[in-house]
Every structure is written in structure tokens, then in C-alpha cells.
Amino acid sequence: MPRYEFRCKDVGMDCGFEIRGAGSKEEALEMIAVHARRAHNLTEIPSEIRSKIEAAIRRV
Ligand SMILES: [Zn+2]
Image (cartoon, rainbow, N blue to C red; front, side, top):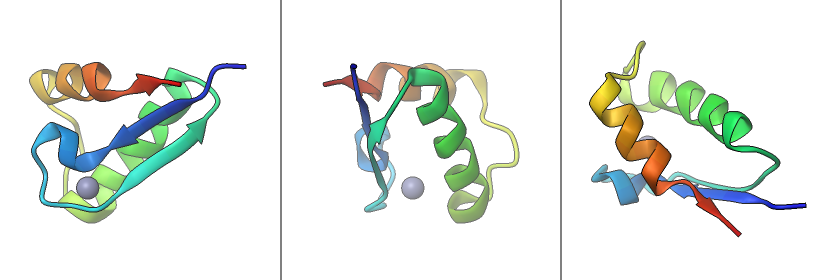
């Protein structure tokens, strides 16, 4: 099964948050949305940031 990884600093945030082993891109995006809300006060992710995030999610 593919796994998905993401590092917050890959989208230009000064932040050590990372996701390892998400089971799908959608799962990773949900975890990122929760993190963005809690850590970065982003209640909604703007579409240009969302596309950056999607590009930064790596399949491993
Ligand atoms: Zn972060």
C-alpha cells in the first residue's frame, strides 16, 4: 500500500509538523487541515495554498 508524507516546511511554513504514513492523499489532506487550523489559524485553506500542499504531499 502506498503511504503519503508531508512536511509543513515544504510549503514555506516555519514549522516542524510532518505527516508520515497517511494511507491516502485525502487522509493526509484532512490531517493537514486540522493542523492548519490549530497551528496556523487557517480555518479555511485558500485554494493556492491547497494546490501547494497537494504538490508537497509525497507518495512513498
Ligand atoms: Zn505547520
